[in-house]
Length: 98
Length: 487
Image (cartoon, rainbow over all chains, first blue to last red; front, side, top):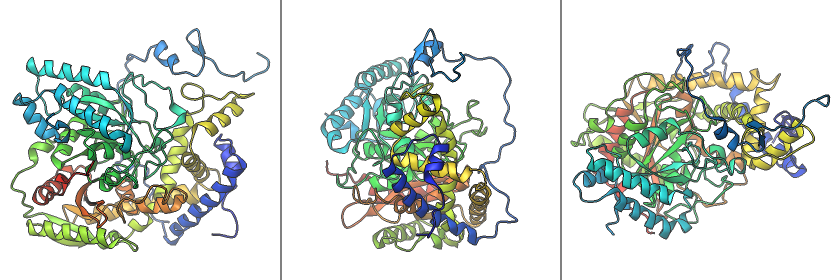
Protein backbone atom coordinates (compact mmCIF):
# COMPACT_ATOMS: atom_id res chain seq x y z
CA UNK A 1 0.00 0.00 0.00
CA UNK A 2 1.21 3.50 -0.73
CA UNK A 3 1.47 6.18 1.92
CA UNK A 4 -0.91 8.53 0.20
CA UNK A 5 -4.18 7.92 -1.56
CA UNK A 6 -4.04 7.98 -5.36
CA UNK A 7 -7.50 9.43 -5.74
CA UNK A 8 -10.19 11.07 -3.69
CA UNK A 9 -12.91 8.42 -4.03
CA UNK A 10 -15.73 10.59 -2.80
CA UNK A 11 -14.85 13.37 -5.30
CA UNK A 12 -14.64 10.92 -8.25
CA UNK A 13 -17.87 9.14 -7.19
CA UNK A 14 -19.55 12.52 -7.31
CA UNK A 15 -18.25 13.06 -10.86
CA UNK A 16 -19.67 9.61 -11.74
CA UNK A 17 -23.01 10.53 -10.13
CA UNK A 18 -22.96 7.69 -7.60
CA UNK A 19 -23.85 8.48 -3.98
CA UNK A 20 -21.66 6.40 -1.68
CA UNK A 21 -22.18 5.56 1.97
CA UNK A 22 -19.28 6.31 4.36
CA UNK A 23 -18.57 2.57 4.60
CA UNK A 24 -18.41 2.26 0.79
CA UNK A 25 -16.14 5.30 0.51
CA UNK A 26 -13.66 3.82 3.00
CA UNK A 27 -13.82 0.35 1.47
CA UNK A 28 -13.42 1.52 -2.14
CA UNK A 29 -10.64 3.94 -1.18
CA UNK A 30 -8.51 1.05 0.09
CA UNK A 31 -9.37 -1.31 -2.73
CA UNK A 32 -8.88 1.19 -5.55
CA UNK A 33 -5.61 2.46 -4.08
CA UNK A 34 -4.39 -1.13 -4.24
CA UNK A 35 -5.44 -1.39 -7.89
CA UNK A 36 -3.75 1.92 -8.73
CA UNK A 37 -0.57 0.78 -6.95
CA UNK A 38 -0.67 -2.30 -9.13
CA UNK A 39 -1.07 -0.39 -12.42
CA UNK A 40 1.98 1.73 -11.57
CA UNK A 41 4.02 -1.04 -13.22
CA UNK A 42 3.09 0.44 -16.61
CA UNK A 43 5.56 3.22 -15.82
CA UNK A 44 8.44 0.75 -16.24
CA UNK A 45 7.94 0.91 -19.99
CA UNK A 46 9.18 3.62 -22.32
CA UNK A 47 6.18 4.21 -24.58
CA UNK A 48 7.21 7.60 -25.96
CA UNK A 49 7.53 6.22 -29.50
CA UNK A 50 4.49 3.91 -29.37
CA UNK A 51 1.18 4.72 -31.04
CA UNK A 52 -1.94 4.11 -28.89
CA UNK A 53 -4.42 1.37 -29.84
CA UNK A 54 -8.07 2.34 -29.39
CA UNK A 55 -9.40 -0.60 -31.38
CA UNK A 56 -7.65 -3.87 -32.19
CA UNK A 57 -9.15 -3.99 -35.67
CA UNK A 58 -8.62 -0.53 -37.15
CA UNK A 59 -11.59 0.88 -39.05
CA UNK A 60 -11.89 4.40 -40.36
CA UNK A 61 -15.07 6.33 -41.12
CA UNK A 62 -17.69 3.60 -41.25
CA UNK A 63 -20.58 5.20 -43.11
CA UNK A 64 -23.95 3.98 -44.31
CA UNK A 65 -26.51 5.43 -46.70
CA UNK A 66 -28.57 8.12 -44.95
CA UNK A 67 -31.94 6.50 -45.41
CA UNK A 68 -34.81 6.65 -42.92
CA UNK A 69 -35.69 3.33 -41.32
CA UNK A 70 -38.25 2.04 -38.85
CA UNK A 71 -37.66 3.06 -35.24
CA UNK A 72 -39.14 1.66 -32.04
CA UNK A 73 -42.73 2.79 -31.58
CA UNK A 74 -43.61 5.19 -28.80
CA UNK A 75 -45.45 2.67 -26.61
CA UNK A 76 -42.53 0.24 -26.61
CA UNK A 77 -40.15 2.98 -25.51
CA UNK A 78 -42.31 4.50 -22.80
CA UNK A 79 -43.20 1.03 -21.45
CA UNK A 80 -39.66 0.82 -20.08
CA UNK A 81 -39.58 4.37 -18.71
CA UNK A 82 -39.76 4.78 -14.92
CA UNK A 83 -42.44 7.48 -15.39
CA UNK A 84 -44.30 8.62 -18.49
CA UNK A 85 -47.42 10.52 -19.48
CA UNK A 86 -49.05 11.11 -22.86
CA UNK A 87 -46.32 9.30 -24.74
CA UNK A 88 -43.55 11.30 -23.09
CA UNK A 89 -41.01 10.43 -20.42
CA UNK A 90 -41.51 12.37 -17.16
CA UNK A 91 -38.37 13.86 -15.63
CA UNK A 92 -37.81 16.09 -12.58
CA UNK A 93 -37.98 19.83 -13.02
CA UNK A 94 -34.62 21.28 -14.09
CA UNK A 95 -35.50 24.97 -14.14
CA UNK A 96 -37.55 26.68 -11.41
CA UNK A 97 -38.81 29.34 -13.88
CA UNK A 98 -40.97 26.84 -15.77
CA UNK B 1 -37.10 -40.16 -21.60
CA UNK B 2 -34.09 -40.45 -23.92
CA UNK B 3 -31.94 -37.95 -22.00
CA UNK B 4 -31.83 -35.82 -25.14
CA UNK B 5 -30.56 -32.95 -22.97
CA UNK B 6 -27.18 -34.72 -22.75
CA UNK B 7 -26.66 -34.67 -26.52
CA UNK B 8 -24.70 -32.21 -28.64
CA UNK B 9 -26.05 -29.91 -31.35
CA UNK B 10 -24.49 -32.08 -33.99
CA UNK B 11 -25.98 -35.32 -32.58
CA UNK B 12 -29.45 -33.77 -32.20
CA UNK B 13 -29.29 -32.30 -35.67
CA UNK B 14 -28.75 -35.79 -37.10
CA UNK B 15 -31.47 -37.32 -34.90
CA UNK B 16 -33.97 -34.61 -35.87
CA UNK B 17 -33.16 -35.02 -39.56
CA UNK B 18 -33.63 -38.80 -39.27
CA UNK B 19 -36.94 -38.36 -37.46
CA UNK B 20 -35.61 -40.12 -34.32
CA UNK B 21 -36.82 -37.34 -32.05
CA UNK B 22 -38.69 -34.06 -32.22
CA UNK B 23 -37.71 -30.63 -30.97
CA UNK B 24 -40.55 -30.90 -28.44
CA UNK B 25 -38.95 -34.12 -27.10
CA UNK B 26 -35.62 -32.30 -26.70
CA UNK B 27 -37.13 -29.28 -24.98
CA UNK B 28 -39.11 -31.55 -22.64
CA UNK B 29 -35.93 -33.38 -21.62
CA UNK B 30 -34.08 -30.09 -21.11
CA UNK B 31 -36.94 -28.67 -19.01
CA UNK B 32 -36.99 -31.86 -16.92
CA UNK B 33 -33.25 -31.49 -16.27
CA UNK B 34 -33.73 -27.85 -15.29
CA UNK B 35 -36.55 -28.80 -12.91
CA UNK B 36 -34.44 -31.52 -11.34
CA UNK B 37 -31.13 -29.65 -11.04
CA UNK B 38 -31.40 -25.92 -11.34
CA UNK B 39 -32.34 -25.51 -7.70
CA UNK B 40 -28.78 -26.61 -6.98
CA UNK B 41 -26.98 -25.15 -10.02
CA UNK B 42 -28.82 -21.84 -10.27
CA UNK B 43 -27.95 -21.24 -13.92
CA UNK B 44 -31.21 -19.61 -15.01
CA UNK B 45 -32.55 -16.18 -14.12
CA UNK B 46 -35.72 -16.52 -16.21
CA UNK B 47 -36.95 -19.60 -18.00
CA UNK B 48 -39.39 -19.19 -20.93
CA UNK B 49 -41.05 -22.58 -20.45
CA UNK B 50 -44.17 -21.95 -22.56
CA UNK B 51 -42.44 -19.88 -25.21
CA UNK B 52 -39.76 -22.57 -25.58
CA UNK B 53 -42.38 -25.28 -26.19
CA UNK B 54 -44.14 -23.06 -28.72
CA UNK B 55 -40.87 -22.47 -30.56
CA UNK B 56 -40.15 -26.22 -30.46
CA UNK B 57 -43.55 -26.99 -32.02
CA UNK B 58 -42.95 -24.35 -34.67
CA UNK B 59 -39.53 -25.86 -35.43
CA UNK B 60 -41.05 -29.34 -35.78
CA UNK B 61 -43.71 -27.96 -38.14
CA UNK B 62 -41.10 -26.08 -40.16
CA UNK B 63 -39.07 -29.28 -40.49
CA UNK B 64 -42.18 -31.18 -41.65
CA UNK B 65 -42.64 -28.43 -44.25
CA UNK B 66 -39.10 -28.93 -45.54
CA UNK B 67 -36.95 -26.50 -43.55
CA UNK B 68 -33.51 -27.78 -42.50
CA UNK B 69 -30.54 -26.44 -40.57
CA UNK B 70 -28.17 -27.55 -37.82
CA UNK B 71 -29.87 -25.41 -35.17
CA UNK B 72 -33.49 -26.04 -36.21
CA UNK B 73 -35.28 -27.09 -33.03
CA UNK B 74 -32.18 -27.02 -30.79
CA UNK B 75 -32.67 -25.28 -27.41
CA UNK B 76 -30.13 -22.63 -26.43
CA UNK B 77 -29.72 -20.51 -23.26
CA UNK B 78 -28.86 -16.81 -23.56
CA UNK B 79 -26.67 -14.75 -21.23
CA UNK B 80 -28.88 -12.13 -19.65
CA UNK B 81 -27.17 -9.14 -21.25
CA UNK B 82 -28.34 -10.00 -24.78
CA UNK B 83 -31.68 -8.52 -25.73
CA UNK B 84 -34.38 -11.09 -26.53
CA UNK B 85 -37.46 -9.21 -27.73
CA UNK B 86 -40.33 -9.19 -25.27
CA UNK B 87 -38.30 -10.86 -22.49
CA UNK B 88 -36.44 -9.41 -19.49
CA UNK B 89 -32.81 -8.33 -19.96
CA UNK B 90 -31.50 -7.60 -16.47
CA UNK B 91 -27.72 -7.89 -16.86
CA UNK B 92 -28.08 -9.48 -13.38
CA UNK B 93 -28.53 -5.97 -11.98
CA UNK B 94 -31.14 -4.32 -9.77
CA UNK B 95 -30.83 -1.43 -12.23
CA UNK B 96 -32.69 -3.34 -14.94
CA UNK B 97 -35.22 -5.37 -12.94
CA UNK B 98 -38.53 -5.04 -14.76
CA UNK B 99 -36.94 -4.00 -18.06
CA UNK B 100 -38.35 -5.66 -21.18
CA UNK B 101 -36.10 -5.95 -24.23
CA UNK B 102 -37.73 -3.97 -27.06
CA UNK B 103 -35.83 -5.76 -29.85
CA UNK B 104 -33.64 -8.79 -30.58
CA UNK B 105 -29.87 -8.56 -30.48
CA UNK B 106 -28.50 -9.46 -33.93
CA UNK B 107 -26.95 -12.71 -32.61
CA UNK B 108 -30.33 -13.64 -31.10
CA UNK B 109 -32.18 -12.74 -34.32
CA UNK B 110 -29.79 -15.00 -36.24
CA UNK B 111 -30.54 -17.87 -33.85
CA UNK B 112 -34.26 -17.33 -34.40
CA UNK B 113 -33.83 -17.33 -38.18
CA UNK B 114 -31.93 -20.61 -37.89
CA UNK B 115 -34.90 -22.05 -35.96
CA UNK B 116 -33.15 -22.42 -32.59
CA UNK B 117 -35.36 -22.59 -29.48
CA UNK B 118 -34.60 -19.80 -27.00
CA UNK B 119 -34.94 -21.37 -23.55
CA UNK B 120 -34.41 -18.42 -21.27
CA UNK B 121 -31.73 -16.23 -19.83
CA UNK B 122 -28.86 -17.35 -17.64
CA UNK B 123 -26.99 -15.75 -14.77
CA UNK B 124 -23.82 -13.67 -14.96
CA UNK B 125 -21.78 -11.16 -13.01
CA UNK B 126 -23.62 -7.85 -12.93
CA UNK B 127 -23.04 -6.07 -16.27
CA UNK B 128 -20.44 -8.79 -17.02
CA UNK B 129 -18.07 -7.37 -14.41
CA UNK B 130 -16.53 -10.28 -12.55
CA UNK B 131 -14.93 -13.69 -12.83
CA UNK B 132 -17.11 -15.87 -10.59
CA UNK B 133 -20.80 -14.89 -11.11
CA UNK B 134 -20.77 -13.92 -7.41
CA UNK B 135 -21.41 -10.32 -8.51
CA UNK B 136 -24.91 -11.18 -9.76
CA UNK B 137 -27.48 -9.15 -7.84
CA UNK B 138 -30.21 -11.61 -8.78
CA UNK B 139 -29.05 -15.14 -8.03
CA UNK B 140 -26.32 -17.54 -7.03
CA UNK B 141 -24.83 -20.00 -9.51
CA UNK B 142 -22.78 -23.02 -8.46
CA UNK B 143 -20.26 -25.09 -10.36
CA UNK B 144 -22.01 -28.29 -11.56
CA UNK B 145 -18.87 -30.29 -10.66
CA UNK B 146 -18.89 -29.13 -7.04
CA UNK B 147 -21.60 -26.91 -5.59
CA UNK B 148 -19.16 -25.26 -3.14
CA UNK B 149 -17.15 -23.85 -6.04
CA UNK B 150 -17.78 -20.94 -8.39
CA UNK B 151 -18.77 -21.59 -12.02
CA UNK B 152 -16.45 -18.79 -13.16
CA UNK B 153 -17.66 -15.64 -14.84
CA UNK B 154 -18.91 -13.49 -16.07
CA UNK B 155 -20.76 -16.02 -18.31
CA UNK B 156 -21.11 -18.40 -15.33
CA UNK B 157 -24.76 -19.25 -15.96
CA UNK B 158 -23.98 -20.06 -19.60
CA UNK B 159 -21.15 -22.44 -18.70
CA UNK B 160 -23.08 -24.05 -15.82
CA UNK B 161 -26.21 -24.59 -17.95
CA UNK B 162 -24.19 -26.38 -20.65
CA UNK B 163 -22.09 -28.44 -18.20
CA UNK B 164 -25.21 -29.52 -16.28
CA UNK B 165 -27.04 -30.47 -19.50
CA UNK B 166 -29.65 -27.82 -18.74
CA UNK B 167 -29.12 -26.41 -22.25
CA UNK B 168 -27.64 -27.87 -25.42
CA UNK B 169 -25.53 -24.73 -25.88
CA UNK B 170 -25.43 -21.13 -24.75
CA UNK B 171 -24.39 -17.69 -25.92
CA UNK B 172 -22.09 -15.69 -23.67
CA UNK B 173 -19.90 -12.63 -24.00
CA UNK B 174 -16.17 -12.22 -23.41
CA UNK B 175 -14.57 -8.87 -22.54
CA UNK B 176 -11.52 -10.17 -20.64
CA UNK B 177 -12.12 -13.92 -20.48
CA UNK B 178 -15.80 -14.12 -19.59
CA UNK B 179 -16.50 -17.01 -22.00
CA UNK B 180 -13.19 -18.91 -21.79
CA UNK B 181 -12.70 -18.82 -18.00
CA UNK B 182 -16.16 -20.17 -17.01
CA UNK B 183 -15.85 -22.77 -19.81
CA UNK B 184 -12.56 -23.89 -18.22
CA UNK B 185 -14.06 -23.94 -14.71
CA UNK B 186 -17.15 -25.93 -15.81
CA UNK B 187 -15.48 -28.25 -18.33
CA UNK B 188 -17.13 -27.09 -21.55
CA UNK B 189 -15.98 -25.45 -24.77
CA UNK B 190 -15.99 -21.64 -24.90
CA UNK B 191 -14.95 -19.57 -27.90
CA UNK B 192 -14.23 -15.85 -28.01
CA UNK B 193 -14.30 -14.86 -31.68
CA UNK B 194 -12.06 -12.25 -33.26
CA UNK B 195 -13.19 -8.71 -32.46
CA UNK B 196 -15.62 -7.71 -35.22
CA UNK B 197 -16.62 -11.28 -36.13
CA UNK B 198 -20.01 -11.16 -34.35
CA UNK B 199 -22.25 -8.10 -34.25
CA UNK B 200 -22.55 -6.50 -30.81
CA UNK B 201 -25.92 -4.93 -31.65
CA UNK B 202 -28.26 -5.66 -28.74
CA UNK B 203 -25.43 -6.74 -26.42
CA UNK B 204 -25.47 -4.46 -23.38
CA UNK B 205 -22.13 -2.70 -23.68
CA UNK B 206 -19.46 -3.10 -20.99
CA UNK B 207 -16.18 -2.22 -22.77
CA UNK B 208 -16.97 -1.63 -26.42
CA UNK B 209 -13.47 -2.13 -27.84
CA UNK B 210 -13.16 -5.52 -26.11
CA UNK B 211 -16.65 -7.12 -25.94
CA UNK B 212 -17.44 -10.08 -28.22
CA UNK B 213 -20.35 -12.53 -28.20
CA UNK B 214 -19.47 -16.21 -28.53
CA UNK B 215 -20.69 -19.78 -28.01
CA UNK B 216 -20.39 -22.09 -24.98
CA UNK B 217 -20.92 -25.68 -26.10
CA UNK B 218 -20.23 -29.33 -25.31
CA UNK B 219 -17.91 -29.89 -28.27
CA UNK B 220 -15.65 -27.93 -30.62
CA UNK B 221 -17.82 -28.91 -33.58
CA UNK B 222 -20.88 -27.42 -31.86
CA UNK B 223 -18.90 -24.24 -31.31
CA UNK B 224 -18.16 -24.10 -35.04
CA UNK B 225 -21.84 -24.68 -35.89
CA UNK B 226 -23.01 -21.91 -33.57
CA UNK B 227 -20.30 -19.44 -34.63
CA UNK B 228 -21.19 -19.94 -38.28
CA UNK B 229 -24.78 -18.86 -37.52
CA UNK B 230 -24.09 -15.81 -35.34
CA UNK B 231 -21.08 -14.40 -37.23
CA UNK B 232 -21.21 -11.88 -40.05
CA UNK B 233 -21.37 -8.22 -40.90
CA UNK B 234 -24.19 -6.12 -39.48
CA UNK B 235 -24.85 -2.55 -40.56
CA UNK B 236 -26.08 -1.87 -37.00
CA UNK B 237 -22.62 -2.51 -35.50
CA UNK B 238 -20.06 -0.28 -37.20
CA UNK B 239 -17.24 -2.41 -35.75
CA UNK B 240 -18.47 -5.65 -37.30
CA UNK B 241 -16.23 -6.64 -40.18
CA UNK B 242 -17.55 -7.05 -43.70
CA UNK B 243 -16.03 -10.34 -44.81
CA UNK B 244 -17.50 -13.72 -45.72
CA UNK B 245 -18.10 -16.18 -42.86
CA UNK B 246 -16.24 -19.44 -43.52
CA UNK B 247 -18.15 -22.74 -43.25
CA UNK B 248 -16.32 -23.52 -40.00
CA UNK B 249 -18.11 -26.79 -39.19
CA UNK B 250 -17.56 -28.22 -42.69
CA UNK B 251 -13.83 -27.47 -42.46
CA UNK B 252 -13.40 -29.82 -39.49
CA UNK B 253 -12.02 -33.11 -40.72
CA UNK B 254 -12.15 -36.47 -39.02
CA UNK B 255 -8.56 -37.47 -39.60
CA UNK B 256 -7.75 -35.74 -36.29
CA UNK B 257 -4.20 -35.06 -37.45
CA UNK B 258 -2.25 -31.83 -37.01
CA UNK B 259 0.57 -32.57 -39.47
CA UNK B 260 2.15 -29.42 -40.84
CA UNK B 261 0.72 -27.20 -38.11
CA UNK B 262 3.02 -25.12 -35.94
CA UNK B 263 1.79 -24.53 -32.40
CA UNK B 264 3.41 -21.83 -30.28
CA UNK B 265 4.11 -22.24 -26.58
CA UNK B 266 4.59 -18.92 -24.77
CA UNK B 267 6.89 -19.30 -21.76
CA UNK B 268 5.34 -16.23 -20.14
CA UNK B 269 2.00 -18.02 -19.86
CA UNK B 270 3.20 -20.48 -17.24
CA UNK B 271 2.99 -17.82 -14.56
CA UNK B 272 4.34 -17.86 -11.03
CA UNK B 273 1.86 -19.31 -8.60
CA UNK B 274 0.22 -21.52 -11.20
CA UNK B 275 -1.37 -24.65 -9.80
CA UNK B 276 0.97 -27.59 -10.67
CA UNK B 277 -2.01 -29.73 -11.71
CA UNK B 278 -3.07 -27.09 -14.23
CA UNK B 279 0.46 -26.77 -15.59
CA UNK B 280 0.80 -30.54 -15.94
CA UNK B 281 -2.57 -30.92 -17.70
CA UNK B 282 -1.65 -28.19 -20.19
CA UNK B 283 1.87 -29.54 -20.81
CA UNK B 284 0.39 -33.02 -21.35
CA UNK B 285 -2.03 -31.48 -23.86
CA UNK B 286 0.91 -29.90 -25.70
CA UNK B 287 2.62 -33.32 -25.89
CA UNK B 288 -0.62 -34.82 -27.15
CA UNK B 289 -0.83 -32.26 -29.97
CA UNK B 290 2.77 -33.14 -30.85
CA UNK B 291 1.77 -36.80 -31.08
CA UNK B 292 -0.95 -35.76 -33.56
CA UNK B 293 1.75 -34.37 -35.85
CA UNK B 294 2.00 -30.72 -34.76
CA UNK B 295 5.36 -29.02 -34.48
CA UNK B 296 5.76 -27.18 -31.15
CA UNK B 297 7.70 -23.90 -31.30
CA UNK B 298 8.66 -21.55 -28.48
CA UNK B 299 7.16 -18.08 -28.80
CA UNK B 300 7.48 -15.04 -26.58
CA UNK B 301 4.79 -12.60 -25.42
CA UNK B 302 6.97 -10.36 -23.22
CA UNK B 303 4.32 -7.69 -22.61
CA UNK B 304 1.51 -10.08 -21.67
CA UNK B 305 2.40 -9.53 -18.00
CA UNK B 306 1.11 -5.95 -18.30
CA UNK B 307 -2.29 -7.09 -19.57
CA UNK B 308 -4.12 -6.87 -16.23
CA UNK B 309 -2.96 -3.31 -15.60
CA UNK B 310 -3.86 -2.26 -19.16
CA UNK B 311 -7.16 -4.11 -19.11
CA UNK B 312 -8.41 -2.66 -15.83
CA UNK B 313 -7.70 0.86 -17.10
CA UNK B 314 -9.19 0.49 -20.58
CA UNK B 315 -12.18 -1.68 -19.63
CA UNK B 316 -13.17 0.52 -16.69
CA UNK B 317 -12.73 3.71 -18.73
CA UNK B 318 -15.04 2.39 -21.44
CA UNK B 319 -17.47 1.05 -18.82
CA UNK B 320 -17.68 4.41 -17.06
CA UNK B 321 -18.88 5.94 -20.33
CA UNK B 322 -21.14 3.04 -21.36
CA UNK B 323 -22.88 2.80 -18.01
CA UNK B 324 -23.61 6.53 -17.89
CA UNK B 325 -26.84 5.61 -19.73
CA UNK B 326 -28.20 4.08 -16.51
CA UNK B 327 -29.32 7.38 -15.06
CA UNK B 328 -32.90 6.62 -14.02
CA UNK B 329 -34.43 8.71 -16.79
CA UNK B 330 -35.38 6.62 -19.83
CA UNK B 331 -35.45 3.06 -18.51
CA UNK B 332 -34.60 0.95 -15.49
CA UNK B 333 -34.64 1.89 -11.84
CA UNK B 334 -35.39 5.44 -10.68
CA UNK B 335 -35.08 6.88 -7.18
CA UNK B 336 -36.49 10.39 -7.06
CA UNK B 337 -34.49 13.37 -5.83
CA UNK B 338 -35.01 17.08 -5.40
CA UNK B 339 -33.24 17.71 -8.71
CA UNK B 340 -31.85 15.55 -11.55
CA UNK B 341 -28.37 15.39 -9.99
CA UNK B 342 -29.74 13.91 -6.78
CA UNK B 343 -31.95 11.55 -8.81
CA UNK B 344 -28.92 10.25 -10.73
CA UNK B 345 -26.83 9.80 -7.59
CA UNK B 346 -29.53 7.98 -5.64
CA UNK B 347 -30.60 5.82 -8.57
CA UNK B 348 -27.05 4.70 -9.34
CA UNK B 349 -26.33 4.12 -5.63
CA UNK B 350 -29.33 1.79 -5.35
CA UNK B 351 -29.13 0.18 -8.79
CA UNK B 352 -25.46 -0.82 -9.04
CA UNK B 353 -23.64 -3.40 -6.94
CA UNK B 354 -20.20 -2.84 -5.39
CA UNK B 355 -18.06 -4.15 -8.25
CA UNK B 356 -19.91 -2.04 -10.82
CA UNK B 357 -19.53 1.06 -8.63
CA UNK B 358 -15.81 0.38 -8.14
CA UNK B 359 -15.22 -0.01 -11.86
CA UNK B 360 -17.20 3.09 -12.82
CA UNK B 361 -15.28 5.12 -10.24
CA UNK B 362 -11.92 3.78 -11.43
CA UNK B 363 -12.87 4.41 -15.07
CA UNK B 364 -14.03 7.92 -14.32
CA UNK B 365 -10.75 8.62 -12.54
CA UNK B 366 -8.45 7.36 -15.33
CA UNK B 367 -10.32 9.51 -17.85
CA UNK B 368 -10.47 12.60 -15.67
CA UNK B 369 -8.65 15.80 -16.44
CA UNK B 370 -4.96 15.59 -15.48
CA UNK B 371 -4.89 11.78 -15.30
CA UNK B 372 -5.86 10.83 -18.86
CA UNK B 373 -2.30 10.78 -20.23
CA UNK B 374 -0.83 9.03 -17.19
CA UNK B 375 -3.35 6.21 -17.17
CA UNK B 376 -5.63 5.88 -20.20
CA UNK B 377 -3.28 7.00 -22.97
CA UNK B 378 -0.37 5.04 -21.50
CA UNK B 379 -2.56 1.93 -21.24
CA UNK B 380 -3.58 2.31 -24.89
CA UNK B 381 0.10 2.47 -25.85
CA UNK B 382 0.95 -0.67 -23.88
CA UNK B 383 -2.06 -2.26 -25.59
CA UNK B 384 -0.18 -1.70 -28.85
CA UNK B 385 2.85 -3.54 -27.45
CA UNK B 386 0.69 -6.47 -26.35
CA UNK B 387 -0.93 -6.63 -29.77
CA UNK B 388 2.45 -6.44 -31.54
CA UNK B 389 3.69 -9.40 -29.47
CA UNK B 390 0.88 -11.51 -30.90
CA UNK B 391 1.48 -10.24 -34.45
CA UNK B 392 5.13 -11.34 -34.10
CA UNK B 393 4.20 -14.67 -32.52
CA UNK B 394 1.78 -15.53 -35.31
CA UNK B 395 4.54 -15.12 -37.91
CA UNK B 396 6.09 -18.22 -36.28
CA UNK B 397 3.03 -20.39 -35.59
CA UNK B 398 -0.55 -21.17 -36.66
CA UNK B 399 -1.99 -21.19 -33.14
CA UNK B 400 -0.81 -20.78 -29.55
CA UNK B 401 -1.39 -23.24 -26.70
CA UNK B 402 -1.66 -21.99 -23.11
CA UNK B 403 -3.50 -22.43 -19.83
CA UNK B 404 -6.78 -20.50 -19.38
CA UNK B 405 -6.57 -19.87 -15.65
CA UNK B 406 -3.83 -20.24 -13.03
CA UNK B 407 -6.04 -22.56 -10.91
CA UNK B 408 -9.20 -24.66 -11.25
CA UNK B 409 -12.49 -23.22 -9.91
CA UNK B 410 -12.06 -21.80 -6.42
CA UNK B 411 -14.53 -21.86 -3.55
CA UNK B 412 -17.51 -19.53 -3.42
CA UNK B 413 -16.53 -16.58 -1.22
CA UNK B 414 -12.79 -17.29 -1.43
CA UNK B 415 -11.89 -14.15 -3.41
CA UNK B 416 -15.03 -12.04 -3.35
CA UNK B 417 -13.66 -9.59 -0.75
CA UNK B 418 -10.44 -8.88 -2.63
CA UNK B 419 -11.02 -7.29 -6.06
CA UNK B 420 -7.34 -7.11 -7.04
CA UNK B 421 -6.81 -10.79 -6.25
CA UNK B 422 -9.80 -11.65 -8.43
CA UNK B 423 -8.50 -9.39 -11.26
CA UNK B 424 -5.07 -11.08 -11.26
CA UNK B 425 -6.65 -14.40 -12.25
CA UNK B 426 -7.53 -12.85 -15.62
CA UNK B 427 -3.83 -12.62 -16.57
CA UNK B 428 -4.04 -15.39 -19.20
CA UNK B 429 -7.28 -14.33 -20.88
CA UNK B 430 -7.23 -10.50 -21.06
CA UNK B 431 -4.32 -10.20 -23.57
CA UNK B 432 -6.52 -11.87 -26.21
CA UNK B 433 -9.24 -9.21 -25.92
CA UNK B 434 -6.69 -6.39 -25.91
CA UNK B 435 -5.14 -7.78 -29.12
CA UNK B 436 -8.57 -8.46 -30.69
CA UNK B 437 -7.61 -12.01 -31.69
CA UNK B 438 -9.62 -15.22 -31.18
CA UNK B 439 -9.29 -17.76 -28.38
CA UNK B 440 -10.98 -20.91 -27.17
CA UNK B 441 -11.02 -22.98 -23.99
CA UNK B 442 -11.51 -26.73 -24.20
CA UNK B 443 -11.40 -29.38 -21.44
CA UNK B 444 -7.95 -30.97 -20.97
CA UNK B 445 -8.20 -32.84 -17.69
CA UNK B 446 -9.25 -32.70 -14.05
CA UNK B 447 -7.62 -31.73 -10.79
CA UNK B 448 -7.26 -34.35 -8.04
CA UNK B 449 -10.29 -32.70 -6.43
CA UNK B 450 -12.31 -33.53 -9.57
CA UNK B 451 -12.56 -30.02 -10.99
CA UNK B 452 -12.15 -29.41 -14.75
CA UNK B 453 -9.02 -27.82 -16.26
CA UNK B 454 -9.05 -25.89 -19.53
CA UNK B 455 -6.61 -25.64 -22.42
CA UNK B 456 -6.52 -22.28 -24.18
CA UNK B 457 -5.97 -22.23 -27.93
CA UNK B 458 -5.31 -18.82 -29.45
CA UNK B 459 -5.45 -17.85 -33.09
CA UNK B 460 -4.62 -14.73 -35.07
CA UNK B 461 -7.44 -12.37 -36.06
CA UNK B 462 -9.97 -14.17 -38.32
CA UNK B 463 -8.10 -17.49 -38.01
CA UNK B 464 -10.88 -19.26 -36.11
CA UNK B 465 -10.46 -22.23 -38.45
CA UNK B 466 -6.99 -22.87 -36.98
CA UNK B 467 -8.10 -22.99 -33.34
CA UNK B 468 -11.17 -25.05 -34.23
CA UNK B 469 -8.99 -27.55 -36.12
CA UNK B 470 -6.56 -27.96 -33.21
CA UNK B 471 -9.37 -28.09 -30.66
CA UNK B 472 -11.38 -30.66 -32.62
CA UNK B 473 -8.39 -32.98 -33.15
CA UNK B 474 -7.36 -32.73 -29.48
CA UNK B 475 -10.89 -33.23 -28.16
CA UNK B 476 -11.79 -36.17 -30.39
CA UNK B 477 -8.56 -38.02 -29.58
CA UNK B 478 -8.74 -37.46 -25.80
CA UNK B 479 -12.42 -37.52 -24.87
CA UNK B 480 -12.29 -35.25 -21.79
CA UNK B 481 -15.44 -33.57 -23.09
CA UNK B 482 -17.43 -36.80 -22.64
CA UNK B 483 -17.07 -36.71 -18.84
CA UNK B 484 -20.12 -35.39 -17.05
CA UNK B 485 -20.60 -34.03 -13.54
CA UNK B 486 -22.57 -36.31 -11.19
CA UNK B 487 -25.84 -34.49 -10.78
